[in-house]
Length: 250
Image (cartoon, rainbow, N blue to C red; front, side):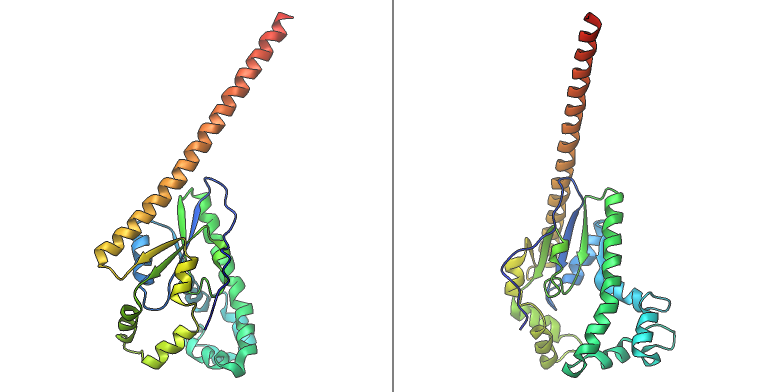
């Protein structure tokens, strides 16, 4: 089973800088619903899965390098990447090297898209932005975040949700869980936990309160920084006036 170190790793953030929130959670925990709510609250959000879909779509940046690496057989009729055909070539122990090759091609493209998203949020003066990354801890991507929010629910509730899906079986569910960091570890590593085992209204209230707290925190930092600069500017101006006055008295 996947595991993580006990050390909490976060990026180095300057006061007043856009707060980068990492959003993650195991299968069936309700992360997609929380992600939708965040967007409804006008929080800029970068969806890692959506980025991969865009890269694999016809004309996407990953199509040509993947075609060169794995051949025409991985292309769809529309000219994009056929994810099913590609997965047949990279899934399983026997294809471990192919999987590494795939990741070496796709991961830098995803990272570049993520970095561009964060830079844009900063330029626009956003108070916070969210990185929706399903495998955030598994890929050790928490180092790109200031705060990590984990979406969690009781195990039995999680199991009920997942097995209600049309394409899911108990065996498939167990196999997926074995590749994910356990929920208990994610909760331990989180800065904030959203409990989706409650009602929808109660869960959404948690998310709204979290966003409000983040926005107020960064806004207060920026206000304090601005007041400090104004104080410094006033002090410098006063010093210059005194110096000018002394010069005229000579």
